Image (cartoon, rainbow, N blue to C red):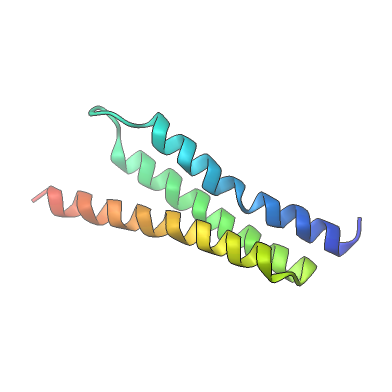
Length: 92
C-alpha cells in the first residue's frame, strides 16, 4: 500500500473513537453509572483518536481528515475534562 492510502485509512479510523465514545455515553447512562470509568474511556479514546489524526496527516498530507479528527476528538476530550471537573466539584 502507498502512504496516501494508508493515511486515508488512518483518517477514517481517527473518527471511530468519536463514534465509540458516543455509543459508550448512551450505554453508560443512568443513576448507577460509574462516571470515572466513563471519563477514563472517553479520555483514552480521544487521545488515541488525536494520535491517529496526526498520523494520518503525516502519511497523506491531507488536512481535512486531520481537522475533522482533531475537532471531534478534542470535543470528546474537553467533555471528559468538564465531566471530571464537575465530579470533583460535586464531591465537596
